[in-house]
Length: 550
Image (cartoon, rainbow, N blue to C red; front, side, top):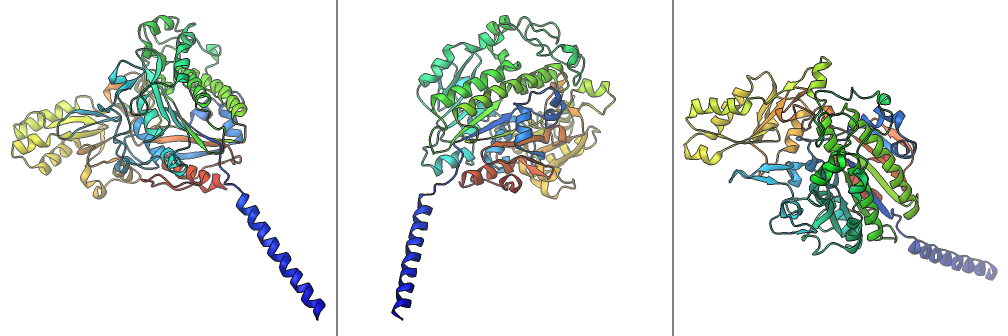
């Protein structure tokens, strides 16, 4: 009996020590997180660019992401208008304009009729620039938190969070409200700058980077095709009459030999070349070194926007040799960027996602030449509307502004003239619905009850911000462009060419795979939140993508 008691006693003691030992091991186990998250949002990157140029990409840029990462083939934008500021904001807030407040690149103030730019802030000053127009920007108009904000909150703001873009809005809005820094391009000097919202002077590493005068070196030899021009079989002829010219070039044809001289006169031209992408990624690399990002156990976040793809796309269109060459050169830049990350951060220590803020329509001339339905939906539309309204109501310019395919009525004038707002709205809608170029025209306050199909209805509702959007939404027929895009192209609409975007995750804890299931750009941030084990952004409407998390 005593022997049995002794055995039981020792067994109990053994289990106690085993339990304590296991508890200590659990206490020592640290939360697994990537050392660095890199957001690569490629401006105006249509999803099909991944595959249209696939055979010409190298193995270690886009193909590395596709062949080692997890790619999603059916990701859409869940709102209209599909424009830059909304795209970047919605990716990083996992929300929509109705909630996060960024209703366009700009919008019209209902009371004053003045144009409001999404990041303008007269309370701050430019830092590194003499121009407040270029430098006086902040995220003050952003109502929701971003995934970058949430990372800062989760780590007691010890995470280093940086936004980088040639565009102010594409750096500021992804970086959130309280980042380490946000930097953008000064077209007067060719330098990267910031504003006093973030800091009172540029860090030394930024000054050192600017002192290199890298843009001058990048444009010194002009712009010629990377490959022999005959090999650009995915694109149309070089001298297409629907393309705009670049700088002092007489025609939109290669080579652009005057690029260096044009840059000397107007440094903004860098944006409309593939060298703007190179410059952006070099600055991003400098930010990693300057802020020592990814060097400790506290995860950092680098939000990069490649903007030159948008400028080149707008100028030449999505079927041009210029846009193909821009993506082939970006592919080579990504090879070098990923090599740098492998070396500095470690191949399995960083997480990258690649997406886009919007796509782009085919050029009107390209569509017309190839017998596709096209045209310009707004030619003479606003003048005709005001003329009709003048006849009926004896009031001039009841249409105060037209932004983002939305019409703003002058409510002060309507009140002054003792007119009925609902009557004026319905008159406008009735006039526009007689125009064969208009697919739908609706009162935005009554979008939910309008007889229009999904997904258009939901995208209108998601994009409507009652304080900043217009009164009436116009949906044009497929393939129609606004008149300001008579050459080149643009974007803004619900159709697949503008709303279908790429999404690839690569790196830390990502297994290779692909999916054709439907997702939205608003699903990106909650997926990142799960990887980082942090809270979703405050206005989140998205869902974590389980396929990549598994």
